[in-house]
Image (cartoon, rainbow, N blue to C red; front, side, top):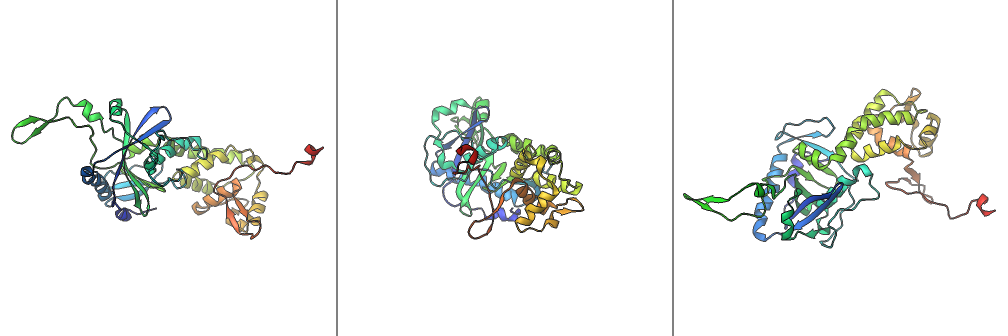
Amino acid sequence: MRNAASWANISLDGDPILVVGRRPQAKTLAGFIVDLHEDTFGAIREIAQATIEEITHCEPVEWHPNAVIEEGEQYLRLNVEGLPSPPRSGRRRKSARVAPADAEVSPQLQEAAALLRLVLAPGELTNLHPAQLQEDDFRFYAVVWERGDAGQPVAFVSEYNPLLVLHRANSWFRFDGTLRLAASPDFALDDRGDLIVTTDEIAILRSPSFDHLFADIRALLNDVPENVDALKRAFSRLPISDESRKALEAVCATRPTFARRLQELATSEHARDVTLAKLHRALRSHGEEPTDFIRNGRVEITRAEVGPFLDVLEGRWYEADFTSEPRRAARWSSRRSRRRRPELAN
Protein backbone atom coordinates (compact mmCIF):
# COMPACT_ATOMS: atom_id res chain seq x y z
CA MET A 1 0.00 0.00 0.00
CA ARG A 2 1.02 3.61 -0.46
CA ASN A 3 2.88 5.79 1.97
CA ALA A 4 1.57 9.28 2.60
CA ALA A 5 3.84 11.04 0.13
CA SER A 6 2.90 8.79 -2.79
CA TRP A 7 -0.66 10.14 -2.76
CA ALA A 8 0.81 13.25 -4.38
CA ASN A 9 1.18 11.18 -7.57
CA ILE A 10 -2.60 11.02 -8.03
CA SER A 11 -3.47 12.73 -11.31
CA LEU A 12 -6.31 15.24 -11.46
CA ASP A 13 -5.98 15.77 -15.21
CA GLY A 14 -9.12 15.48 -17.30
CA ASP A 15 -12.71 16.19 -16.37
CA PRO A 16 -13.90 15.30 -12.86
CA ILE A 17 -17.08 13.33 -12.24
CA LEU A 18 -19.49 14.04 -9.39
CA VAL A 19 -21.41 11.08 -7.93
CA VAL A 20 -24.10 11.40 -5.27
CA GLY A 21 -25.47 8.41 -3.40
CA ARG A 22 -28.51 7.63 -1.31
CA ARG A 23 -30.11 4.62 0.33
CA PRO A 24 -33.59 4.00 -1.15
CA GLN A 25 -34.12 1.06 1.21
CA ALA A 26 -32.23 -1.01 3.75
CA LYS A 27 -29.08 -2.70 2.42
CA THR A 28 -29.48 -0.97 -0.96
CA LEU A 29 -27.43 1.91 -2.33
CA ALA A 30 -28.27 4.03 -5.37
CA GLY A 31 -25.85 6.33 -7.14
CA PHE A 32 -26.28 9.09 -9.70
CA ILE A 33 -24.04 11.17 -11.93
CA VAL A 34 -24.41 14.93 -11.54
CA ASP A 35 -23.54 16.54 -14.88
CA LEU A 36 -20.97 19.29 -14.38
CA HIS A 37 -20.59 22.50 -16.33
CA GLU A 38 -16.97 23.23 -17.15
CA ASP A 39 -17.02 26.33 -14.95
CA THR A 40 -17.32 24.01 -11.91
CA PHE A 41 -14.20 21.99 -12.74
CA GLY A 42 -11.84 24.30 -10.86
CA ALA A 43 -13.86 24.25 -7.63
CA ILE A 44 -14.38 20.47 -7.86
CA ARG A 45 -10.66 19.94 -8.43
CA GLU A 46 -9.85 22.04 -5.37
CA ILE A 47 -11.75 19.51 -3.18
CA ALA A 48 -9.44 16.73 -4.34
CA GLN A 49 -6.33 18.92 -4.13
CA ALA A 50 -7.13 19.89 -0.54
CA THR A 51 -7.63 16.21 0.36
CA ILE A 52 -4.33 15.22 -1.23
CA GLU A 53 -2.56 18.09 0.50
CA GLU A 54 -3.94 16.93 3.84
CA ILE A 55 -3.02 13.27 3.44
CA THR A 56 0.54 13.92 2.29
CA HIS A 57 1.22 15.54 5.66
CA CYS A 58 -0.32 12.69 7.65
CA GLU A 59 1.26 9.55 9.05
CA PRO A 60 -0.31 6.27 7.83
CA VAL A 61 -1.70 3.91 10.47
CA GLU A 62 -2.83 0.38 9.61
CA TRP A 63 -6.56 -0.01 10.16
CA HIS A 64 -7.81 -2.27 12.93
CA PRO A 65 -11.14 -2.22 14.79
CA ASN A 66 -9.85 -0.20 17.74
CA ALA A 67 -7.59 2.16 15.82
CA VAL A 68 -7.73 5.82 16.86
CA ILE A 69 -6.06 8.59 14.89
CA GLU A 70 -5.30 12.24 15.43
CA GLU A 71 -7.30 13.96 12.71
CA GLY A 72 -5.06 16.10 10.54
CA GLU A 73 -1.94 14.23 11.69
CA GLN A 74 -2.68 10.59 10.84
CA TYR A 75 -4.85 8.56 8.51
CA LEU A 76 -5.94 4.93 8.47
CA ARG A 77 -5.24 2.74 5.49
CA LEU A 78 -7.28 -0.34 4.71
CA ASN A 79 -6.48 -2.94 2.08
CA VAL A 80 -9.62 -3.78 0.08
CA GLU A 81 -7.92 -5.52 -2.83
CA GLY A 82 -10.22 -8.12 -4.32
CA LEU A 83 -13.34 -6.77 -2.63
CA PRO A 84 -15.15 -4.77 -5.34
CA SER A 85 -16.07 -6.08 -8.75
CA PRO A 86 -13.60 -4.73 -11.32
CA PRO A 87 -14.86 -1.41 -12.70
CA ARG A 88 -15.96 -1.59 -16.29
CA SER A 89 -14.50 0.88 -18.72
CA GLY A 90 -16.50 3.45 -20.62
CA ARG A 91 -19.24 5.91 -19.72
CA ARG A 92 -22.30 3.82 -20.56
CA ARG A 93 -24.93 5.60 -18.50
CA LYS A 94 -27.76 3.15 -18.70
CA SER A 95 -30.30 2.29 -16.06
CA ALA A 96 -27.92 0.84 -13.45
CA ARG A 97 -29.05 3.20 -10.71
CA VAL A 98 -28.91 0.66 -7.90
CA ALA A 99 -25.69 -1.20 -7.18
CA PRO A 100 -26.49 -4.92 -7.57
CA ALA A 101 -25.36 -7.62 -5.19
CA ASP A 102 -22.26 -9.49 -6.28
CA ALA A 103 -22.73 -13.24 -6.14
CA GLU A 104 -18.99 -13.72 -5.50
CA VAL A 105 -18.89 -11.33 -2.53
CA SER A 106 -19.78 -12.51 0.96
CA PRO A 107 -23.14 -11.18 2.22
CA GLN A 108 -21.24 -9.45 5.02
CA LEU A 109 -19.36 -7.37 2.43
CA GLN A 110 -21.95 -6.83 -0.28
CA GLU A 111 -22.93 -3.35 0.89
CA ALA A 112 -19.32 -2.19 0.99
CA ALA A 113 -18.63 -3.74 -2.43
CA ALA A 114 -21.72 -2.00 -3.80
CA LEU A 115 -20.54 1.37 -2.53
CA LEU A 116 -17.10 0.85 -4.05
CA ARG A 117 -18.69 0.01 -7.40
CA LEU A 118 -20.74 3.21 -7.28
CA VAL A 119 -17.73 5.46 -6.78
CA LEU A 120 -15.16 3.53 -8.85
CA ALA A 121 -17.36 2.71 -11.85
CA PRO A 122 -19.39 5.91 -12.36
CA GLY A 123 -19.82 5.20 -16.06
CA GLU A 124 -22.49 2.65 -15.10
CA LEU A 125 -24.69 5.23 -13.36
CA THR A 126 -27.63 7.23 -14.65
CA ASN A 127 -27.91 11.02 -14.49
CA LEU A 128 -29.52 12.81 -11.57
CA HIS A 129 -32.76 14.56 -12.58
CA PRO A 130 -33.49 17.97 -11.02
CA ALA A 131 -36.78 16.61 -9.63
CA GLN A 132 -34.80 14.16 -7.49
CA LEU A 133 -33.30 17.04 -5.50
CA GLN A 134 -36.52 17.15 -3.51
CA GLU A 135 -35.86 13.69 -2.06
CA ASP A 136 -33.16 15.10 0.21
CA ASP A 137 -31.86 11.74 1.46
CA PHE A 138 -28.37 11.64 -0.01
CA ARG A 139 -25.78 9.91 2.18
CA PHE A 140 -22.56 10.86 0.44
CA TYR A 141 -20.96 12.34 -2.64
CA ALA A 142 -17.74 11.46 -4.44
CA VAL A 143 -15.47 13.39 -6.77
CA VAL A 144 -14.01 10.88 -9.21
CA TRP A 145 -11.26 10.74 -11.81
CA GLU A 146 -11.66 7.56 -13.85
CA ARG A 147 -7.94 7.26 -14.68
CA GLY A 148 -6.38 9.29 -11.87
CA ASP A 149 -4.58 6.44 -10.11
CA ALA A 150 -2.04 5.24 -12.68
CA GLY A 151 -4.83 4.62 -15.18
CA GLN A 152 -7.27 3.30 -12.57
CA PRO A 153 -10.13 5.21 -10.89
CA VAL A 154 -9.75 7.25 -7.73
CA ALA A 155 -12.60 8.75 -5.70
CA PHE A 156 -12.62 11.41 -3.00
CA VAL A 157 -15.63 10.51 -0.87
CA SER A 158 -17.45 12.69 1.66
CA GLU A 159 -20.14 11.54 4.03
CA TYR A 160 -22.08 14.72 3.46
CA ASN A 161 -25.55 15.42 2.12
CA PRO A 162 -25.01 18.19 -0.46
CA LEU A 163 -28.60 19.35 0.05
CA LEU A 164 -28.94 19.28 3.83
CA VAL A 165 -27.50 22.70 4.65
CA LEU A 166 -29.62 24.27 1.92
CA HIS A 167 -32.86 22.99 3.39
CA ARG A 168 -31.87 24.07 6.89
CA ALA A 169 -31.23 27.65 5.80
CA ASN A 170 -34.15 30.03 5.49
CA SER A 171 -32.63 32.82 3.40
CA TRP A 172 -29.45 33.48 1.45
CA PHE A 173 -27.55 36.74 1.25
CA ARG A 174 -24.41 38.28 -0.18
CA PHE A 175 -22.54 41.19 1.38
CA ASP A 176 -20.61 43.84 -0.54
CA GLY A 177 -20.96 46.62 2.00
CA THR A 178 -24.71 46.24 1.95
CA LEU A 179 -26.49 42.99 2.71
CA ARG A 180 -28.44 41.82 -0.33
CA LEU A 181 -30.64 38.85 -1.05
CA ALA A 182 -29.01 36.08 -3.09
CA ALA A 183 -30.52 33.22 -5.03
CA SER A 184 -30.64 29.91 -3.20
CA PRO A 185 -28.08 27.41 -4.55
CA ASP A 186 -28.99 23.81 -5.40
CA PHE A 187 -25.84 22.08 -4.12
CA ALA A 188 -23.28 22.67 -1.38
CA LEU A 189 -20.04 20.65 -1.22
CA ASP A 190 -17.49 20.39 1.58
CA ASP A 191 -13.96 21.69 1.09
CA ARG A 192 -12.29 18.23 1.18
CA GLY A 193 -12.99 14.50 1.24
CA ASP A 194 -13.26 12.16 4.21
CA LEU A 195 -11.90 9.12 2.36
CA ILE A 196 -9.77 8.44 -0.71
CA VAL A 197 -10.87 5.25 -2.42
CA THR A 198 -8.90 3.30 -5.02
CA THR A 199 -9.31 -0.21 -6.40
CA ASP A 200 -7.06 -1.70 -3.71
CA GLU A 201 -7.03 0.72 -0.79
CA ILE A 202 -9.18 3.07 1.29
CA ALA A 203 -7.39 5.96 2.99
CA ILE A 204 -9.49 7.09 5.94
CA LEU A 205 -8.97 10.68 7.06
CA ARG A 206 -12.10 10.84 9.22
CA SER A 207 -12.99 7.59 10.97
CA PRO A 208 -16.68 8.29 11.68
CA SER A 209 -17.35 8.67 7.96
CA PHE A 210 -15.83 5.27 7.26
CA ASP A 211 -17.77 3.69 10.12
CA HIS A 212 -21.06 5.02 8.78
CA LEU A 213 -20.50 4.35 5.07
CA PHE A 214 -18.75 0.96 5.47
CA ALA A 215 -20.55 -0.36 8.52
CA ASP A 216 -20.52 -3.95 7.23
CA ILE A 217 -16.73 -3.96 6.88
CA ARG A 218 -16.32 -2.66 10.43
CA ALA A 219 -18.73 -5.28 11.77
CA LEU A 220 -16.90 -8.09 9.98
CA LEU A 221 -13.46 -6.96 11.14
CA ASN A 222 -14.71 -6.45 14.68
CA ASP A 223 -15.69 -10.13 14.72
CA VAL A 224 -12.21 -11.39 13.80
CA PRO A 225 -11.13 -12.40 17.36
CA GLU A 226 -14.37 -14.32 17.84
CA ASN A 227 -13.97 -15.99 14.44
CA VAL A 228 -10.37 -17.00 15.21
CA ASP A 229 -11.70 -18.75 18.32
CA ALA A 230 -14.41 -20.37 16.18
CA LEU A 231 -11.75 -21.52 13.69
CA LYS A 232 -9.76 -23.20 16.48
CA ARG A 233 -12.90 -24.97 17.68
CA ALA A 234 -13.89 -26.06 14.17
CA PHE A 235 -10.39 -27.41 13.36
CA SER A 236 -10.31 -29.23 16.68
CA ARG A 237 -7.78 -31.81 15.44
CA LEU A 238 -5.38 -29.10 14.27
CA PRO A 239 -3.56 -27.56 17.28
CA ILE A 240 -2.85 -23.87 16.68
CA SER A 241 -0.32 -22.02 18.85
CA ASP A 242 -1.12 -18.79 20.68
CA GLU A 243 1.40 -16.90 18.51
CA SER A 244 -0.34 -18.23 15.40
CA ARG A 245 -3.67 -17.09 16.80
CA LYS A 246 -2.26 -13.59 17.30
CA ALA A 247 -0.91 -13.56 13.76
CA LEU A 248 -4.32 -14.59 12.35
CA GLU A 249 -6.03 -11.84 14.34
CA ALA A 250 -3.52 -9.17 13.38
CA VAL A 251 -3.69 -9.85 9.63
CA CYS A 252 -7.39 -10.68 9.26
CA ALA A 253 -8.42 -7.62 11.29
CA THR A 254 -6.95 -5.39 8.58
CA ARG A 255 -8.04 -7.33 5.47
CA PRO A 256 -11.80 -7.57 4.84
CA THR A 257 -11.43 -10.41 2.36
CA PHE A 258 -9.24 -12.36 4.81
CA ALA A 259 -11.78 -11.74 7.58
CA ARG A 260 -14.54 -13.11 5.38
CA ARG A 261 -12.47 -16.20 4.52
CA LEU A 262 -11.72 -16.75 8.21
CA GLN A 263 -15.43 -16.58 9.01
CA GLU A 264 -16.34 -19.08 6.29
CA LEU A 265 -13.58 -21.52 7.30
CA ALA A 266 -14.88 -21.49 10.87
CA THR A 267 -18.15 -22.98 9.60
CA SER A 268 -16.72 -25.29 6.93
CA GLU A 269 -17.85 -28.92 6.93
CA HIS A 270 -14.37 -30.35 6.29
CA ALA A 271 -12.80 -28.62 9.32
CA ARG A 272 -13.28 -31.53 11.71
CA ASP A 273 -11.41 -33.91 9.35
CA VAL A 274 -8.21 -31.85 9.04
CA THR A 275 -5.31 -33.15 11.14
CA LEU A 276 -1.64 -32.20 11.39
CA ALA A 277 -0.77 -35.27 9.33
CA LYS A 278 -3.21 -34.28 6.56
CA LEU A 279 -1.95 -30.71 6.58
CA HIS A 280 1.64 -32.00 6.39
CA ARG A 281 0.77 -34.16 3.35
CA ALA A 282 -1.09 -31.31 1.64
CA LEU A 283 1.83 -28.93 2.05
CA ARG A 284 4.32 -31.53 0.85
CA SER A 285 2.17 -32.38 -2.19
CA HIS A 286 2.25 -28.74 -3.28
CA GLY A 287 6.02 -28.44 -2.94
CA GLU A 288 5.93 -26.49 0.32
CA GLU A 289 8.13 -27.16 3.33
CA PRO A 290 5.75 -28.37 6.07
CA THR A 291 8.06 -27.14 8.86
CA ASP A 292 7.35 -23.58 7.69
CA PHE A 293 3.85 -24.12 9.08
CA ILE A 294 4.12 -27.00 11.56
CA ARG A 295 6.54 -27.11 14.47
CA ASN A 296 6.50 -28.69 17.90
CA GLY A 297 3.37 -30.68 17.12
CA ARG A 298 1.20 -27.68 16.28
CA VAL A 299 0.59 -24.98 13.68
CA GLU A 300 3.21 -22.24 14.04
CA ILE A 301 2.82 -19.34 11.61
CA THR A 302 3.80 -15.69 11.47
CA ARG A 303 1.88 -12.87 9.81
CA ALA A 304 3.65 -13.65 6.53
CA GLU A 305 2.18 -17.18 6.49
CA VAL A 306 -1.42 -16.21 7.27
CA GLY A 307 -2.44 -15.87 3.61
CA PRO A 308 -0.87 -19.19 2.52
CA PHE A 309 -2.29 -20.92 5.63
CA LEU A 310 -5.82 -19.82 4.72
CA ASP A 311 -5.16 -20.87 1.12
CA VAL A 312 -4.22 -24.43 2.03
CA LEU A 313 -7.12 -24.82 4.47
CA GLU A 314 -9.51 -23.72 1.72
CA GLY A 315 -7.86 -25.93 -0.93
CA ARG A 316 -6.91 -23.04 -3.22
CA TRP A 317 -3.61 -24.54 -4.37
CA TYR A 318 -3.31 -26.80 -7.41
CA GLU A 319 -0.94 -27.73 -10.22
CA ALA A 320 -1.66 -27.26 -13.91
CA ASP A 321 -2.41 -30.60 -15.57
CA PHE A 322 0.03 -30.37 -18.47
CA THR A 323 2.82 -28.16 -17.11
CA SER A 324 2.70 -28.95 -13.37
CA GLU A 325 2.97 -25.21 -12.76
CA PRO A 326 1.98 -24.37 -9.15
CA ARG A 327 -1.15 -22.23 -9.21
CA ARG A 328 -3.55 -20.58 -6.80
CA ALA A 329 -7.29 -20.33 -7.38
CA ALA A 330 -8.43 -16.78 -6.61
CA ARG A 331 -12.06 -17.88 -7.05
CA TRP A 332 -13.70 -21.19 -7.69
CA SER A 333 -16.99 -22.99 -7.90
CA SER A 334 -17.96 -26.65 -7.53
CA ARG A 335 -17.59 -28.80 -10.61
CA ARG A 336 -19.67 -31.86 -11.39
CA SER A 337 -18.05 -34.71 -13.26
CA ARG A 338 -19.36 -35.25 -16.79
CA ARG A 339 -19.03 -38.99 -16.21
CA ARG A 340 -21.88 -40.80 -14.48
CA ARG A 341 -20.98 -42.56 -11.26
CA PRO A 342 -21.09 -46.40 -11.51
CA GLU A 343 -23.88 -46.70 -8.98
CA LEU A 344 -26.03 -44.37 -11.11
CA ALA A 345 -25.22 -46.21 -14.34
CA ASN A 346 -26.81 -49.38 -12.99
